Length: 467
Ligand SMILES: [Zn+2]
Image 1 (cartoon, rainbow, N blue to C red):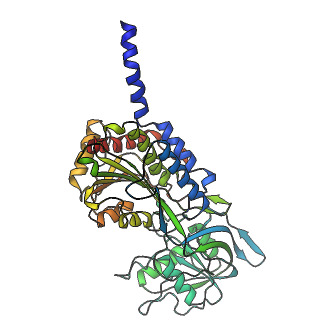
Image 2 (image 1 turned 90 degrees about the vertical axis):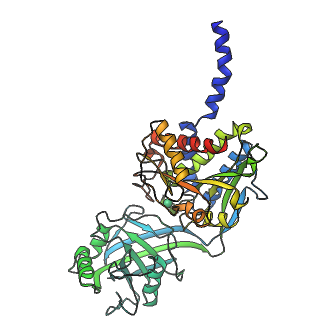
Image 3 (image 1 turned 60 degrees about the horizontal axis):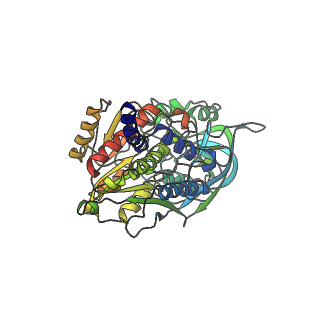
């Protein structure tokens, strides 16, 4: 009898195992997506398209279909820029020191190419307009400018900060390269990050653009008679430029491959529901697959948390729900967005080219940077209180620590959905961004317990909507 009882239980037990979220499966995806083979998953690069192939194969292997008339690969036109190599030295003639890629400096994602050795001129915020100009009274022709990576905080009503506009101002004054640095008087000055955010403005293919640490910018300024901190205090308090020759040289070499007519790819797959009416309603689970690439072969940005963690969760949830697909009432669409880091281009393109009618989308759950941090959090709850209440209820039922903080307006890849009037939540942990866009965002930093809990949370909230 006892033996028979166990035999009866066994198949149920096996089925339950295959259907639950597995830390091992999640970490397997992260380890692959964050590996050197994929080289930072830069949109338009072979590493990114390898990640796409991996995801498409995974969806196919789990019986997922295309959504609507779409192919699984949705082509998204974007300008692409691949950093092929870079070298930076600073010092005085005959006494130059090479900086370490990824530690002392990073290359801006939309840097141009060039090989410049020239004196450095500090130009404040690098801002140039008729009412205020950091270029007033200094000659930067043929030189390299060092600028803070921010708008002047005392000028109100300026458009959002733009790397391109700042580089363009330097270019128009004849500078040959730009070195960005975080403001030294900030509480936590930013380290040199890998970043594709570049804003609006002209693009100069022959102008290298890098970011250095506050410390190395300090070395650049050591012969000037000023410290960067003192210069910032002076500019901010007097609201007047304090541009000055650094008394130091820099040698900046960047080789980049720019393609104004490049493309990236969203990956879109579906598990159809079976209820005669509800099958035409959809829950979308999405995360961005791209990251910020590499500095040639010197270093790459693994993006384990940002956002291999969210992509791996989308893949894992496809596996989990595919094992249970006959019980689905509503349909689930799984999307990996092909370009978030440059400014939400993958999700924006998807929203503008939806495979299903907009009004049939019940909820979008965006997963971004869910591998680190300490408490569950769901953004956009102020725009969608009913969804947020469901998520809070699930967390409470399971005794999972959940932050009560939420907001409105979407956030990250949820923003274009929000703007289109599509409901959704943006899942992210609190304190999730410690290694953001640094070479240290590698699989070792993933908090596996918190990460698995987060994916189980998304699974449970999704179940409430599709089962
Ligand atoms: Zn990012």
